Image (tube, rainbow, N blue to C red):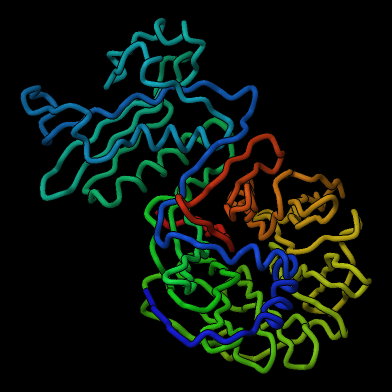
Amino acid sequence: MTIVNSKFVTFFQRIAKIRKLLLLSITAFSMSLFAVSAMAELTIEISEGYDNAIPIAIVPFHYEANNSVASTSSQTSNSQSPENLAYIIAADLRRSGRFRPLSNEELPAQPTDIDTINFEQWRDLDLDNLLMGKIIAEGNGFYQIEMRFIDVLRKNQVIGKRWNHIPKSNLRQIAHQMSDLIYEELTGVRGAFNTQISYVTLRKIEGKRHYTLEVADSDGFNPQPILKSNQPIMSPSWSPDGKKLAYVSFENGRSQIFIQSLDGKFRKNIAKFKGINGAPAWSPDGTKLAMTLSKGGSADIYVMELETGKLQQLTRKFSIETEAAWAANGESLYFNSDRRGKPQVFQVFLDTGEINRVTYNGNYNANPEISPDGRYLSVVHGEGGFHIGLLDLYTNEFRVLTDTFLDESPTFSPNGEMILYAMNQDGKGQLAVVAIDGKTSQTLKVKDGEVREPAWGPYLNP
């Protein structure tokens, strides 16, 4: 964690302009100056789900106090388990909107081995799948974890896996890995529960604002501060390996771009040019960073080679051009420009410099983000308010996904199934997640506070 302190300087006109460049407008920026509880866990409320959510049984994991599976005298109750893995997995699958985990009261039994399962009993519930497992204490704070995912109709095990020598601090991560395995088995799409998100919170202490850039698990647990400052922090962007963040900080009295490792051992100011330094975005291979700079007099898109610091200027219009997002193949960038009078999304190719307009739906489309497979473009769509829109680049179909208020900063989950974004609800800044088909949504909020500037990180290494 890095802590920075600097004297507050009134740069509201510049901040307003940057907010217009990076997000929506001065109004949207003012909505982001909220009193926030730092390092508070995000709580999740599921507001909508699929009508045909698949019922699934997640049996409480059997806990054994030592490695002797056969000795019943050594066994203790599930309530003494170091972590409720079944609860975490059920919450993950429920959040996806695709599954309806049964409550413990609905479970007809709590088997621990496939030989003890009465399949007829489970089929009577119109249930196709069942998860059971064990947590075995190895001693010295380490555990062995077993999972068995059962196809009730075929009466066989479809997933069996064991993790050895897992510290208590990593048990939640193991639960998310199990959720990912189940999600992929049943949907054919890799799960994204064992991932992280970053966001910016702000709290007021004795009338002074304190910003914190935080990283948490995808379900909001285990928040960790990456940077603290009494000046605004904006636009966090994950490196492809998930080990670093690029972001904008005003700690030196004006916008500058930093790169920082999550462990706090590395931090570097890479862009402190005259004027605006904003909207960093990592290239897919992690060797370059796109950014908005106004050192030439107008806000333009540049690409920096991180090893050498060499800059390539991609746009040269006397207009606002910002919010660059890399194409999945790394060969072009999508960006927001008001060169036609109102913000729309354009695409620029790195090799030729050719620029093409991409969005035509409505008068306002900004803050572009590309899905990991390169098929979808998410934008902030301004029509009857600011909402998250989705453009299918293959079919050119455009849909508005959200009906929340002052939506901004869309960011895809690494499997492309969900979009995390910032919004305003009941006058408070919160985060929300919506499926790309718009059929399920959820809200993530900090108790007694507010949060902004989300970015969904890449897959974690196993």
